[in-house]
Length: 540
Image (cartoon, rainbow, N blue to C red; front, side, top):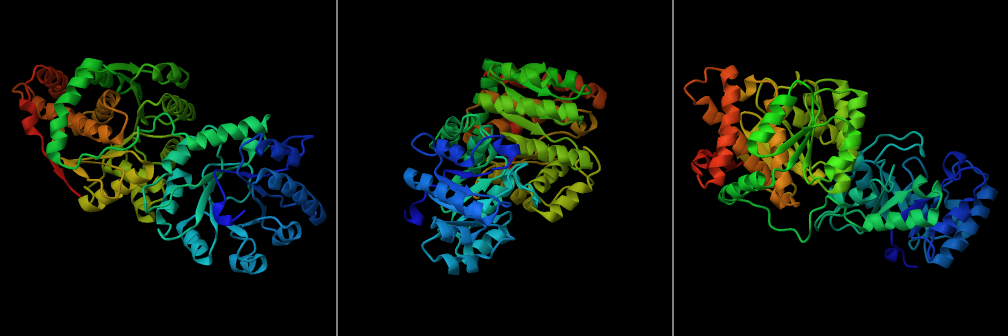
């Protein structure tokens, strides 16, 4: 087998420890079941850090006989001497194992050498050294490997993939906590347009080695890797709206779609804003439900609506419920809006934000500028931004507006990493979606009273959920839907504040609900006068 022809789609790393393999099971028997023609594993790495050399050679020879019969390469972890002794196809080396140059000189050019990397610098060094593939991780927390330097998440995985030199022939697999619950999502979120590199495979350990039926587990994992998740947009992609005229032209139909479909807006939020959020949902045309118990989410997700996770109150029980709901809506292919309230204010909130971002796919990430900077920090994009996020005072946007261009670039990078829509709110709201050339839109509507009433930011998330639930499944539809929601919400605030009887935030709230309703009703009746107020521009 030529090394350039290797299929890395489902890469099995063995583990013979009782905690993973289980008592009385033979590592070779498990591997044999997972290999073709019974199973679907396409590459095997023999990993045993503690065994006697004689035992390792004997086991490696047994494994090599099995992989040769299946037409699958066998690699040995770290031990070049074992690989040479059994004549297998290559080795995999970590950052603290034998160096790449030495391994290559001992094995020769025809053998496969893979290298573990966890950051961009390690990736670039491995590419320069001539690695045949990269094992990128650790993606998720795992018990199969000690001394893990860091959990990089899907965001960290994407950062590495996007920085691999376009001309490099190196292949890539990711490792760390990959299983049937996340393989499809990780593969989809790690697919990138040319000339960027995409993920070539997923490396699994306990998902097969610890499976009751390794054959069935391997077949399912390969199917998941090659199948887009339920929330993935249809392909081929359409062109993303790039002009304000195009965006504004779509707003009336989106307002009417919400009114016609009355989509469910499932809010997981705190008691302080539940009543207000429910009334906002009704006013814009949605059907609200305030349900914080995660066990209900699977049934609610089947009703064709959207989920809003509003991190107003952070408790271990609440976080567990958020994660259950996120998984349920991802499985149903329904949109999720995440509002990371106060994300950078405390260590607890920073940790919760990182957990939620890593646990599933978020269609729309919406927060004020400080909260979005905390999400950028949680994604590992910038140490400077991490420091800035940690200085956040609470749930407000901080003492001043971020530099618009710098913020625009940062949220576009974040949207590209996560393949979603990002909304950074403030005096001016900024919205963008994935793609290095995707526009960043600025929306300058709204009123200062919105900042004087508790929960108005949360209720914007509710409004966005109604619009993305009524829109199409693709990012090309979600971006205009988010802009339409912002305009509906912010222009209604302007109209309410201009009423003669509105004297301050107390009289503003009921007038605001009225205007949300009036904008919807006017649009359905064909009156688009309110939309003339729209102030939308392209920042980048």
